[in-house]
Image (cartoon, rainbow, N blue to C red; front, side):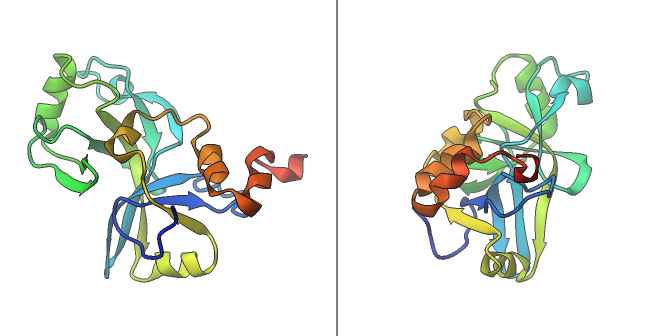
Length: 186
């Protein structure tokens, strides 16, 4: 399950030792791009209290908005699994696409052609400069995992997603699966 080399499409699972960091504690990040200049990802398991209609009133849908990460949180991003409907999308991997024509996307949501299992919206993203993510990996901040859900990850429930990933890792990680989110409050 765990890969040795970072590449787009992988999941980054926050090590249980990341405590007190509001953005990354118990985060699972979909790595959207990784190259020699740096990396970009979206936290896929941190829903916010907003829906797409709250942010863009002309979209008549209640799709949740997720905290994509601490960078550019005033910008809206999206991933989806319907490149045949959304032009100008960029493939991440495994049938997951990033962005595309937003006007078409709004129309498709409003006419019911796109469901919440097809698209996920984020405020902000997670970004790393050249070698920064590799350094964090060496510092044991992240666990790399293959995305075994492929493009179905978009509709995956987020409530216990980090815990599910930790349980799948097994071994020494199992003890962390039932630990309180903030052990200092225990």
